[in-house]
Length: 193
Image 1 (cartoon, rainbow, N blue to C red):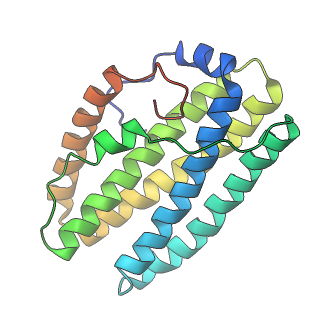
Image 2: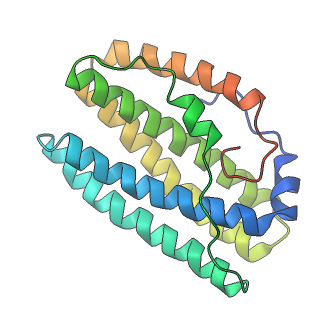
């Protein structure tokens, strides 16, 4: 369903289980960044009323997810750690050239967002199936369902606002590029790395 060209190495879950506190901190910031991304769509493209309405709802939902992750961090007797660079996102954002029309910029940003949500969904599915901590596994199962909805929403908006054939071609090219990024990741203490 997600179209990802390279699945996450299942051994990544072993890294997660040994570093769950680091993963939870990284996950909390991923949710905060997702909310910020939704707000940036509102600020950058206010004339797209349907997109704005969805992004308002998404920003609320993502901050709700941030709170849920933060609550788990506190319940474990920890505090939210410092944010780190997301190497996955930094590499991904190099794919499309800068510039172009506002519509092109919008479509590219929507495709990036769709792919980040798709990879998060895939990672959350893996965690929901493989974590030994049943409570966390169930938590990630619920978030997986939410991420799948976000992925399809962003991809559908890209197709709505851009030329469908061109968008689908760009999507496939981006998926191939992302697979190359993933070959060097799945070794880190982060949601995407």
